[in-house]
Length: 259
Image 1 (spheres, rainbow, N blue to C red):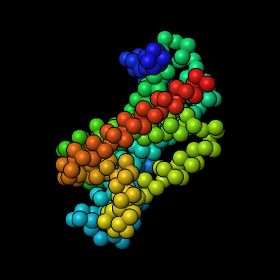
Image 2: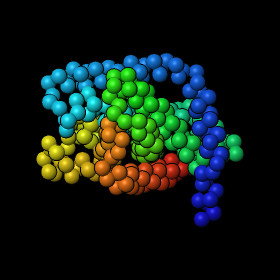
Image 3: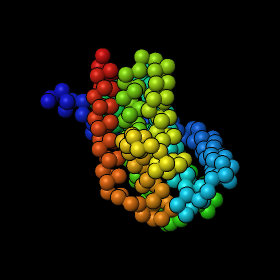
């Protein structure tokens, strides 16, 4: 019990978040410009290019159908990248974690600060995608802004999942498994590009167990209609996944740092 309290996170995790924010200031303009261009290309290629050959999806154009899914997918990719390659570099190559632990910070502070930063950076990407959707006239409700807390929870969840992979990774190559077996299947089979009802029954069940599926349903409902069906259920599932991944990530990273 005393060992747990010794490494438990505290309000000082904010200092870790501020450290990452200060570093981010030196390249954020280039990243924002690149992200806006990338998001617009996604929408043009999939929404309007491919969408010309796709009939309306439940009364909405294909671009409007995939737009909300892209918002949460971009958050997933950003959180995953920052919590795997970014965190691995900070932990194993640059030894930034070790430097932080020489300050009055616990392992819990370092892990929680890193996770909050991963989620914050993902939230920035999602906001940029929302701006792109608004520019193309694909936001159907002012309640679309309510998707941002959902995105933050979702990004925190994927950051926790990525940090679990980082704690277990012997090298950068290990992340090929993480992206090929976890991130990519969710990107394609969470209802971002086509309705889940078109899948076989067993595949629909698998999709409903994917965390991203719940984020896609919430985002599509809020951005297009201003409300989402069964919102409390999907929020509950997101919260359960998030708390579970965060707890495991904190334990594994702590063990690796102490080793």
